[in-house]
Length: 416
Image 1 (cartoon, rainbow, N blue to C red):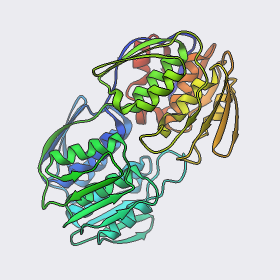
Image 2 (image 1 turned 30 degrees about the horizontal axis):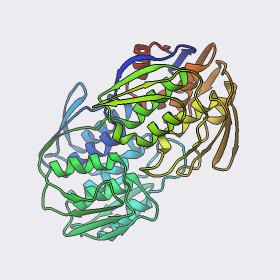
Image 3 (image 1 turned 90 degrees about the vertical axis):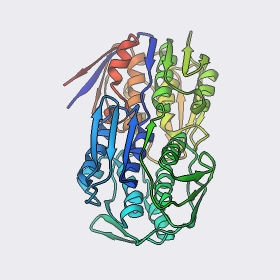
């Protein structure tokens, strides 16, 4: 099993290019199931989850031509409508084939999903939405089996905001008869990116980016070319790492408009931030100030940045409260940060972090994707060597992270 070894203490300096967003790429790859034509995607990140999704689509009969950070799908010969457990267990996003398969072929069999162990993320919102659109659904032997002669437009209200639920039903509704209205829909930029791709394919969608999305179904979608949006979580992670280490970095090929809450918090921490076009420059001199954080659905502070800000707070001046409202198990990195000397108390969904002047290197274990990033940041500021075990989580969501950090002056290497 691979590990990362980090010698802490070096401020990050220089420039880094931001990759395409994993959370946008995965649903957009599933959109290739909606058409018999060709879907050409660019700015695709080289990630384990992207590879897993490609294998799943190939298994279903999609053909793919692969080039560096690009892929061309063709859905003209899809014959297998099943997503098996061995594919789905490592990647919850595989549930996103359910809507497109039922919409285009009238049949889908998808294993109940796995993924990061950060709490329950029920698929009942996907199921209820498809049932409202006329699908017959049975849960059999750990699989969701959905059938429909043709989906019908419906008004669907989400009890809780669900990004994958919104995306799945948006894709299903694109080929349904009539109008579908999704209320209390997710407003994340990745939902908007999927809608942009679907519109390029001929879908009729409006309201994406708000809590009410309206889709007027069409008989068929056609091929298109789409560039995956930049990864806002990778952008935020590098900015927090630079702020924590007292560095000065410039991100290229990113977007400030999808990072507003993160940039506000970094400014509060004392960082100087300058935005020019698709670049963000951050400079931090001195110790950061402690920052209170409360996660909530977009456009509020993203849960996927909570762990990284906790690492920043560990060495910040003062104390901060970190409140997690999205996932109930998303403080598993706390005990690992304590191994490095962090002072953190947890009660329910709230952590109180008291900043210390320095952390000390130790061996720690990654428990999920964003916890892995948090431990990398902690390792970059800790005195001595930090070894992070189980980094396969990192490879699911960060493209060549050790190479990019090395570019910025970090002393980091991958070991077996």
